[in-house]
Image (cartoon, rainbow, N blue to C red; front, side, top):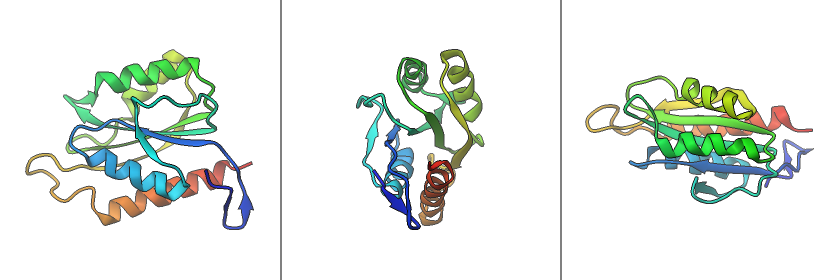
Length: 151
């Protein structure tokens, strides 16, 4: 976990979890994780339950996040997580935030208002995404979020 950024001590517990089928969301998760000094792991890997920030990534399948992601978000209500930060990829819709926020609200999960979303490649749509610009933007989003919520 990062213990300093821009000269400030922030020592926070941060985790990055994601679900992906095609690999697009994993690319974004890896970029976010590298930016905040942790390892991105699939949602099948349990969190400790004492995270200050949990970056949670999903993509869209059939116009909504996969059932595994929906169940994962619901399970977070029993964990001690300060804030969950949504990120994701999709070829057609603009965000997974609305679907995730409804589940989070029902489960008592504190979901940040900020999120990161970018296009993901699906068949011939948005080929090459997420690209380097998308991944850099994801890293910058994560660094800025952590900096803003430090101490």
